[in-house]
Length: 343
Image 1 (cartoon, one colour):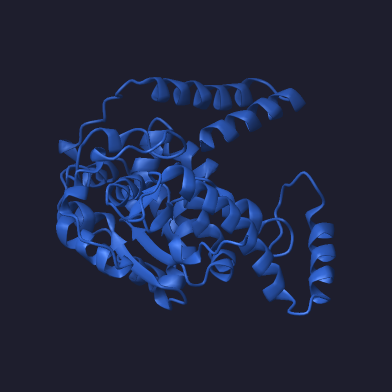
Image 2 (cartoon, rainbow, N blue to C red; image 1 turned 45 degrees about the horizontal axis):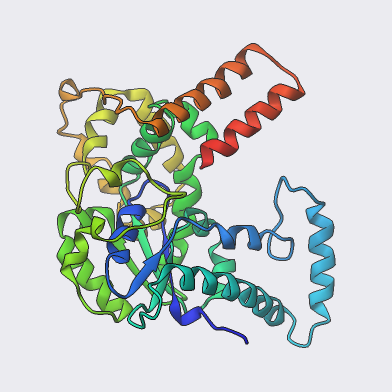
């Protein structure tokens, strides 16, 4: 029996380190929404060959694209038939995720939420597959995003972080295009709104999703989420949204010119229109740094955990092996480190 999941899906679209895990936990704590660790279902499907090519794949992606497009050209409804097939595949898997996550027999649960960050990079494909699903776009100040990214995953090494993934120059234009001219049911919220006005922001979200407003959901640890991909660090420190992390990036970038340059360089190619749509106009992008006193900056202390230790070892292996040795084995080790760091 075919199952249509479109009306039961919420896609939380954001960059890494924008607060998506916190927002997912809040929505998961309502009686109407369930979620699981990032499934990374759609980005892989998007790059099977028909929609877009990829640089590295275990098959000849150009041949795959040509073959698939030639096949689709003979379908009665051409592209629409292809996207319908993709939708059927996703419906089956999202339906299973929904069923195993929501309490058995609980008919009050209306939505399954997917917060995979890479969904932001395949939005044209995702919106072709699910044009009528609900989309929540989450943004945060670009300086805060990259400071959190570099400090959380690369031990404060901004250069290593940008070499691995220049997330600002990749994600902001991809998301801003849709923010400027929405083509799907979409609500835009910011990390700053969530932590400074949590009740008001949650009310906007529940009105958009047409679900009951439950302010107690802001105590997001009241509902469990299965462990997996996502943020295992900051979201565990608090029980509800707090403002303590909102401006941490300001002093750090004001105190270190090199770090600021790495962030600013990523934004140099982002258009003013994209920054306006993001909520951080170019004219005021760095205004909070103008009154910052760099002398007040205190380097962050490492809060040790098994997760942090594992990442430090991976970063060291990736950098040190590359500097000391060369060859096929080294490339393979580096590749393995890259894959593990993505997790």
